Length: 312
Image (cartoon, rainbow, N blue to C red; front, side, top):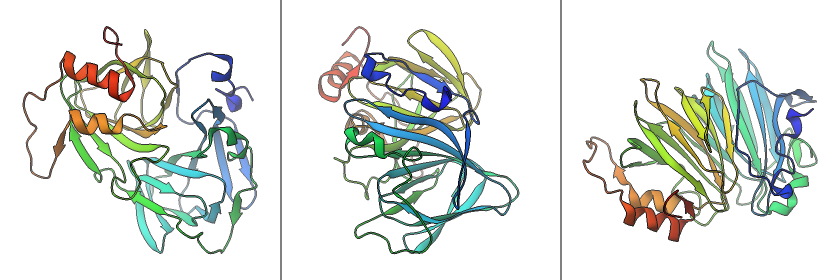
């Protein structure tokens, strides 16, 4: 069960460790009436963030029954196959690269379609970091399976890989950031959902975040994640976790576009990425010479909680 308790208590002990967890690793657990899950992170907790992570794979014709969780918000990131999500009064495709947000008290049903297994990672969160004991699946009290009415004000939001608000990024991070659910989720919400697509040969420079924890799943392609000075392969379905102050960067040496999708909790980088990027609109060519210089780096450090070697 060592993997099941991965990261449990790390930050409370004053340690700062980033990890890359390969896909399909972690103990399996069957929840009666719900299905089989793979436990990735049982409980992560620091002063500002609490979450757990599970992975699921639905074979041909399999499904997750209609259910809700009254204690946790959930972000589901699909990295393989296709299916549909029934929730929020509609039925929406859920396929590779898609992001699904399910608020507390919202009912959803997920069905696999096609010939390939539907594979996705679920990040469960609580608004107050002190409520980590309420996280699924260590706590199943919030799980309700079967018919039921959505809680007032609850939401089911789904965007495909190509949907969201895109922002071209400056060299050497050639590619773009996609902010998910920009119009539906308040900009002061306690976490955000986004993806980054790096062009072949591009890289994200070494940096960290003062308060935010970054959790991301590789949804297309592969590359390398560098944590402090350790290089790790990061490919389809792999998950990374960077706690606050853990410096890291990404290198796309694969020859193909590379995308990873995840969350920042608490949110901190979103306004910075909008401000330093250029909105990518349909039919628009990549702009030349997006500024990224010591002045913009100082702004990232002083206003948005970035850690940049040589600037911070």
